Length: 170
Image: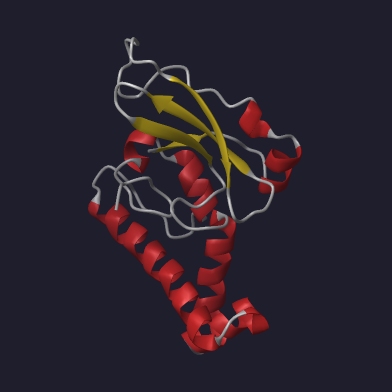
């Protein structure tokens, strides 16, 4: 289960200062009263951005791990929310998804792979916007950037939103 780690650090600062080492989860989300064997469970490295680790905890009684995901990272997609926002902007300015995908991914991958990569991000952002517009408690402002939105929303709301902004299970 992913839980937001509130931070104002950028990915570079977070990695350079190894902020995952000082991240704290004071109690088990499943057993707030304790007694479940809740303990730190190390960390894992994200593929992108490189050198960035995520702090983890484990509930022995609930057989579940909990990860503190920094506000700048996308949930269930590699990379940062700023990168996803950049992809959406490039796509909006391009004449086609293929041209946008080619501009974003270049010669690293085939065009069909780049298009699939971009469409996953576009679809994810569209799904988040649709979910937010259906939630009466949230006044969706289309000018709000995705990273700012993640940082501003409560953990309760984030648990009901899909990735890459929220942590709702697929």
